[in-house]
Length: 361
Ligand code: NAD
Ligand code: IPM
Ligand code: MN
Image 1 (cartoon, rainbow, N blue to C red):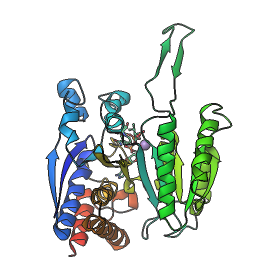
Image 2: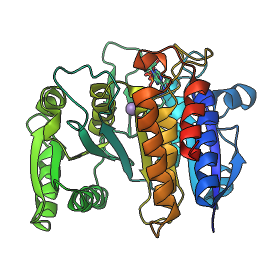
Image 3: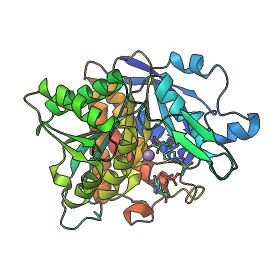
């Protein structure tokens, strides 16, 4: 029997509303497939904790999490109380970096029963994976402000792309494509405008592609790539991008499939030297928090990805993943739906319906 230790961090806003539904579905899957999940409930990495203590996490956060098999995370950020760069660099971005979760894997899939904002798209037309670099690139704290407060004020922010960092995420993308039916990689670039980093990134991509003659690949500038997400989403299979480009694409992709509320992510340290982190793509959604109307599927699907990743022999964890996905699809077809899907169901209603479907009720 598999036993996993999971750190459970709801965080802020709707993170606190979708987390109970994620756990409800995980428990249903664990019960059905004979998996034991031991939760460690954590209240830090939240703006409530910041309000009480003046910081996002305790000094020993890393020691508290290092022994965990995975981190199940809701969302962080409450901009009315704490500036976003403080709350996020003090929590989520720290986890990604210090636990070397260099792949952020974010699927986009159009499901039956979900209204698609794009014309003439049917389920199956959109089914791709965004592989986002997650530890470096445009996300950096290298830089500063000079001549502050004067007319000559200057701000500089340095991007950092390492050979190791780029190669490992590109390799992950090509390996992933190799396992998929269409075996196709699209590399996001911007080598016309970003004249230093992106021509170099293109070179790393070409060198990696040469090792995968069985995988079709191309590179596209991020501007036209974004347009094609909307106009021709069926042409994508695996899309690999630097940190910022991947961030933007991973809200756009799910938006093209109906709602951001569905989208999951896996922040992976593929070598398993550190715990990986599983969280919905969306944030704390202050505009809807407190009404129990958020769509919990992004949280629930992330839990399915977690069970799949944890089970290295592809047994019960894979089965639990597949059962959760099937339950999500069943409820999207004919179950209760939240407001973002055009319904009136609550977060809890949807979580309960999916959990019941997983349990085989
Ligand atoms: P957001 O993702 O929180 O919300 C964007 C829009 O999508 C809002 O209108 C929101 O109501 C809607 N939405 C999001 N999730 C939904 C769901 N599950 N069901 C229905 N509707 C949903 O992005 P934002 O408004 O830019 O950011 C709010 C806060 O969250 C900020 O502090 C931001 O930094 C933070 N944030 C955190 C994460 C994270 O923890 N991974 C991700 C994105 C944003
Ligand atoms: C995401 C979020 C984060 C990111 C923010 C909150 C720092 O938007 O997980 O996509 O940009 O990575
Ligand atoms: Mn984002």
